[in-house]
Length: 207
Image (cartoon, one colour):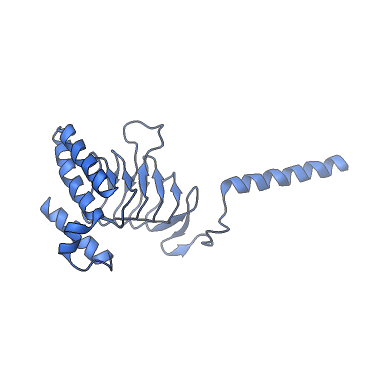
């Protein structure tokens, strides 16, 4: 546990240019405090002392604004930057050296049982306000853009953007133009298809 907590501390120092020293991070950083509390809560949860586990997690939530269910499995080196509004569900699994920004939700869809929450591989980055919902995997080294809503599996070494999220880059190669203003939406595509079909029917009627 202490080695893992040290890795969490090192992660903040490596990835946050505002972090001046380990003393400051240990005592003042809400993201680090939340992860540190989760390590303790998870130990109690795994040893079937669930009330104590939940008490620790809820106390941490009130102090940091970050809600991590004590049943979640979190690897070493997790960095939660700013952190306010982050929610991590019970069956979530997070690999090593991942980064989450404020407002991220690793949650369920409400229709699944058992394994209900996502699995993040190693070195995954999830941008602020993103929602990853459901029991699927986000592959190693994947990047989720800010505000994205991820409902399906994301391959390793890829970048996903949009609502619902689509992969726009894989292994460093662009799949489609990364344009978050004019990004193709499946609802828009369907409306365009229907409009085209209506125009075709109208033309046939006129003939």
